[in-house]
Amino acid sequence: MEVKVAAIQFACSSDVNENIEKADKAVREASRNGANIILLSELFERQYFCQERRYEYYDFAKTLEENDAVIHFSKLAKELQVVIPVSFYEKDGNVLYNSVAIIDADGTVMGVYRKTHIPDDHFYQEKFYFTPGDTGFKVWNTKFGKIGVGICWDQWFPECARAMAIDGAQILFYPTAIGSEPILDVDSSGHWMRVMQGHAAANLVPVVAANRIGIEKVEPCKENGMQSSSLRFFGNSFITDNTGAIVAKASSDTEEIIYASFDLDAIDKDRLSWGLFRDRRPQEYEGILR
Amino acid sequence: MEVKVAAIQFACSSDVNENIEKADKAVREASRNGANIILLSELFERQYFCQERRYEYYDFAKTLEENDAVIHFSKLAKELQVVIPVSFYEKDGNVLYNSVAIIDADGTVMGVYRKTHIPDDHFYQEKFYFTPGDTGFKVWNTKFGKIGVGICWDQWFPECARAMAIDGAQILFYPTAIGSEPILDVDSSGHWMRVMQGHAAANLVPVVAANRIGIEKVEPCKENGMQSSSLRFFGNSFITDNTGAIVAKASSDTEEIIYASFDLDAIDKDRLSWGLFRDRRPQEYEGILR
Image (cartoon, rainbow over all chains, first blue to last red; front, side, top):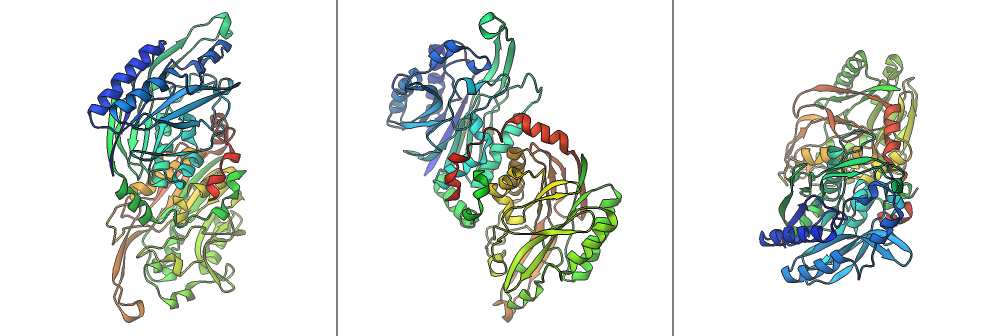
């Protein structure tokens, strides 16, 4: 099966409807250009609110059934017959998660994956907002192939990619929100790409990552403890082939849609011919569970 | 602690003593240039005999105590005060392994690691020669830092790198023998580098890989079932930093020694600052043991 994937890169405003409208236009364009699976970035409904800690932001979380983006893109997926993973802030009873709803090409919401690995750095204060996910790593048998979806920080963990590949994922997707590190003053974009290129190379699956761009500022005020900060999201959304080679890449500061096509049957054969899954030694891997 | 590592790349002849002599000269040169840990390629005592299946090649295997290269480089390590992992064909009772002896800077043979993952392709017929290793992944507390050593095919498995990193490895080493694929007709050198760059990036440890070069031919004869083949080993020995960026690389066809220096304490701090080991979720990794 020949599948065309797209990754959408844009800057997010503070207006939910505006962001959904922007994403809607981009998804329609990607579909017109033949994309079957279309990846949006992480938590694209809003600016990256985890830059500061505010109790009132807990109100952003909604159930799967009530989330605006999930409702919107479920309809659009059905209309365009495309698969769309939708990242959103999920409320389940009293517990809040960083989740992604997988929407199949008939508009069905297949379920959610909840981000397993939650970062916690000066301006990526996600442990304040999200409980570590309880769904485990999942593979989704969509109309356009079996896909695995991790969320941002998950992309740094080989275990996540490996678990999805073992379960039969044919392409891995990572909605992302990553940028500058105001304290560390390091450009991690190359590092960020290499770790995912490694997942592709080790598991012989293409990888698709969609990141946001733009500068998002936090002004000092009493409610945030007089914090002042600014993140520049570094874009660089990219797609690799099943050897980890980058086949499409966006810039660090422009709104773009990137594309790549893959013959999933040919890649499945190539994966078997390498013998890597044949030669695994799970009985030797207990150390990974430490 | 500042540590300088070196990877030695050369072509192997069919004469054991000649290869040991060549390796000896290169190790002395690397030491003169300040290297503390010096990596030789996989099974450098001989041409890559796994290209064909011959029962008489089982005689190449010797015990740790009797192997010529281990004896030789144990003395040299003591003389030069350098750490040398020595790849060799090991006989232990009736079982034969693809092993590496870790020699500390005082000449002590610290022990062996036995290759966990054994390939089996048309001209990499290692399952005929080697039983999969039974030592598990190991970390060696040498005079120049804690090192992990995998062997060739192990380098394609994220589990191996991850297990060594979890156990505290500060640098990962991979003695290697890889080249062309006469049947598949694919150049896997980029793929090979990317998978290890991924290990470095995910585990925040430098990676050092030493490969051989040269064309090694097998002539058809009754004893090998009239097989005829030829492998071109593709060199490209390389060293990455702890983000997976390549900081030194050899060519595909010249004899070379490459070097890089690392401040292991600074890298340890950097690793902690990323929080990746903090945010692991081992209880979610059972799927890896499948």
